[in-house]
Amino acid sequence: MPTDDDLRVEIMDADVRAAKQDWLAARDSGAPTSIVDATFWLYTRLMSTQAQQIADAFRKARDCS
Image 1 (spheres, one colour):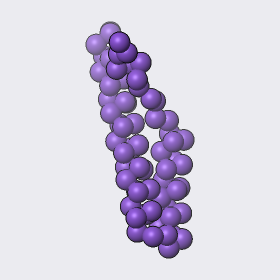
Image 2 (cartoon, one colour; image 1 turned 180 degrees about the vertical axis):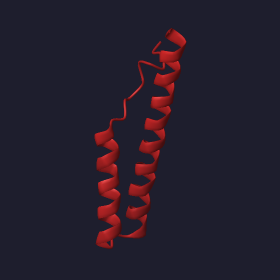
Image 3 (cartoon, rainbow, N blue to C red; image 1 turned 90 degrees about the vertical axis):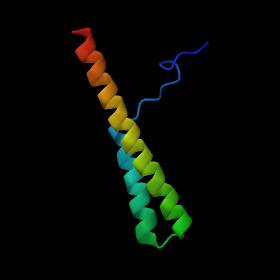
Image 4 (tube, rainbow, N blue to C red; image 1 turned 45 degrees about the horizontal axis):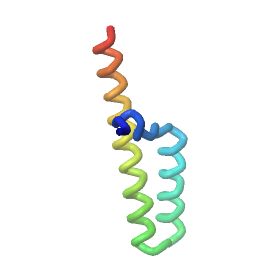
């Protein structure tokens, strides 16, 4: 049975930057609202997930010391 660590995907700064660029491009190009909303949703989810990963790594490092 896979563990949570086996299913984990690391979100990198480049992922967040690319998602932000996609959202801004959609917003500034006059893309349909559904596309702008979808790209913004992905951008915010990646930021949130990365923040959680940073917090998890901090707690893990603190607990191991």
